[in-house]
Amino acid sequence: MSKQFKAFVKKLLSLSLILFSAISFAALEMSFEGKNAKLNLIISNTDASRRKGLMNQAFLEKNTGMLFIWPSSKKQCMWMKNTSLPLSVAYLSSDGRILEIYDMVPFSEDSICSMRNVRMAVEVNQGWFARNQITVGDKANL
Image (cartoon, rainbow, N blue to C red; front, side):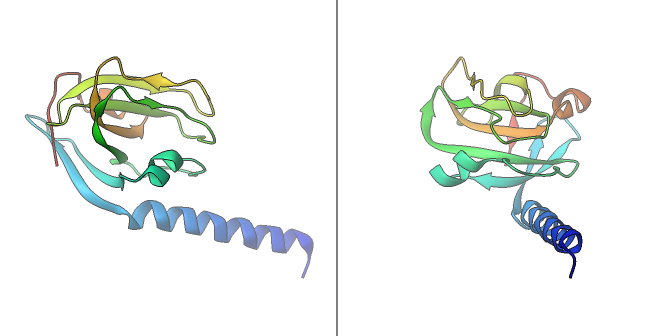
């Protein structure tokens, strides 16, 4: 077998694993009061899963996001280390109210921190909130 073919197979298997993992863990649906938009969510509620986030993902399906849940409400920070996808993040209160929304820069190691105490964050493809007219103050339902 040629080295090029082996490299191709390895990349194809890696991509398949990434695609499978992004799809198979979307286990929760989020809707928004008074809006037609819905998100399929990948849950990130452990230290390890929150640290990994969407790092090394090749793409994120339309209307899919990652929900980060922390044990308690406090100021939280996100970054884009090893993340090639342009993302938007919404910080939410414990009752699901959107408190802040930010666009993030791929591969940036700058922290994007909440200004207020938050319990959750949702990362989606950049512009998803704007395209779906989801704004600060809207309430998410899980």
